Amino acid sequence: MNNMTIRTISGSIIVAIFIALFFLNSQGATFAVYLTITTVILGEISFNTKKQNGSKIIEYIAYTYVCIPILFIAYLFCVYGDNCDINNIFFMSLLTACVFDTSAYLGGKILKGPKIAPSISPAKTISGTLIGFVSVLVLYNFVLHRELLRTFSMAFVCSCGAFFGDLLQSKFKRVLGIKDMGILIPGHGGFGDRFDGLIGVILVNMLLYLLKSL
Image (cartoon, rainbow, N blue to C red):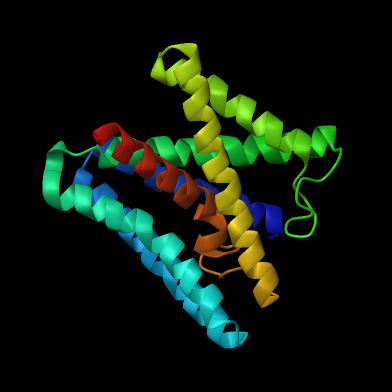
């Protein structure tokens, strides 16, 4: 099988798992899945850093970035149990990351144009990034049904979370001199490559949640 076929099959399996998780609507199951994703990503970071003799400082920064969102999710789960917002936070973050990543990729492929961060991620374009943001804005306007300014603000900051999550992962790989974080998701470059945007959006949603609680 060629790489695209492998990527499609593994991607379809991931989508099927998340659809089943969504309809299960269990805070505990959602927490367990995200904890598993986080644990595997931490393992990939540790393995690649040791294999490439990478900087400990970079490794600890990567650990911190990945761990903060799961600690926040764990806090919500332990304190509020079934009354917390884990499902909403997780699935909206996942949907945001997927919409932004896919539309930015397709938009960049079609429109091309100047690169937004060529030294870190040569494939990312300004046009693709803007298309990604507009797509998330349309998604939020359709799903959230809130006033335009609030919808625009949330779409913007969450898109930034997806973008910088992806960018940080690319930077980490550049520093280590590797192409993929792992091999556990065939065709997708490992859990770190697949869920980097998700972590970024959850981190942003965590900050929004804390600000709302003040």
